[in-house]
Amino acid sequence: MKFSCPVIIVESIEKSRKFYEEVLGQKVILDFGENITFEGDFALQSKSSWQGFIDKKAEEIIQKPNSFELYFEEENFDIFMECLKAIPDIEYVHPVKEYSWGQQVIRFYDLDGHIIEVGESMRSVVKRFLASGMTIEETSKRSQYPIEFVKSCLE
Image 1 (cartoon, rainbow, N blue to C red):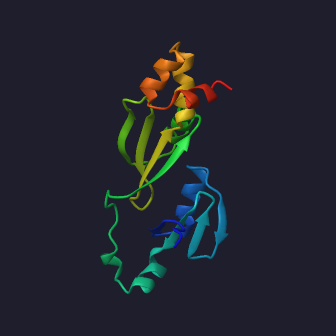
Image 2 (spheres, rainbow, N blue to C red; image 1 turned 180 degrees about the vertical axis):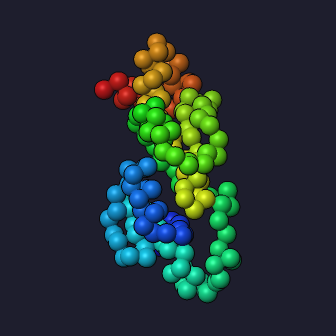
């Protein structure tokens, strides 16, 4: 058996498609109208069609459960954050955090209450550490990535 992709249920395919394309830079690879799949191997399904698939009423499909997220990585985290701040009505789960391994992340909700996490790519984290004057060994220890990975970020 092969896992294919997560499917998230949305109120409006059109609005959600626009959100994922414009805010997160995703590209649609399959469009079946009530279901679309993005290059990142996740899909959106309209709530109205989903109801028929699972034989449930609209009120039985829970929004904003805070128990699932879609995770994205960004090479240019600071630039992404400037763009995100310019978008009105984004509801944040929390402000930017920096974890002990140095990665910066932001979590916010999409239009239907699904959590989106955007994290700084670890390659960018390592490059940032090295540019700040940390040695390869210090960078490896702080980022929790092997020395070989840290060295590959110098290329």
